Length: 357
Image (tube, rainbow, N blue to C red; front, side, top):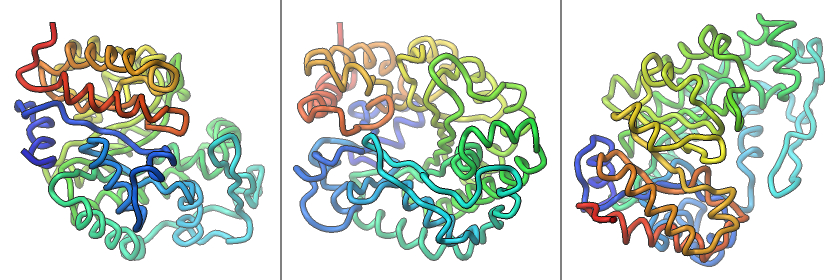
């Protein structure tokens, strides 16, 4: 059974030969050790094959932070002043350290333009075709877009965005119109050039004790945008996955029943996202991730990693729909030994029929 066959069976709650592995790479040591030579896409594929990762939604380049790419795409497609933006590495990641505005009046002079799908296709479609060529049938790439809320508060900065919700809601709506169209265009392009039968919206709306934004505001301003972005994937029969860190329990009913997501990632353990509770409550929801990146993977032993994997598989795998992996990503702070322990344990204990006692 190849990766595509295994993934299709998993997301349709049909029994595969083993639990499928899903993850997002973000560890330069793994790329250096196992990636070999070639493009970032080729290096990611080589690492995935070496470690045993079946499915991903992103291509990691240790020499260029994804935020740099995002700002460059904004400059190209949103009509921005190219000299007004700066991305600076700091604390193991990168931040937008300079914008050409810092208040509402400045933002009004620097509002993004509506992106054009045809122009977006010029860079996105060739990338998808190259991923399809390199990944072949054994690896699966899920199309993904950052959600309209995340893109909007990345554009303005989180503090200003939260102020605008109260002081200039019309400006917030204009920003969300732009970022929603961006995500919708990506969804359409991915479906038209699909290499995997699922699509991700990644919109970080929560922290460890609840949502950043009120459920009421999300209901009134965001849910219908997510549905609009997912629409091309739904029409094509693709599964629609949603990613947000943090505690989503207060909005999960609406995500499942109104937005109609098919899968959830990453189920962050420290935020109280218990996969067994969620599976019992939403038996048809595909679960992706859950082995804690911030504790057991980063600071535990390989044996502790294996025990976490065994529990996840025992709780979820018998009922199907499990794509096991880290709770967020394989980041720089995770030791290589624990990375190996993670995927080896999934393959050891995830053989169907599941027989963990």
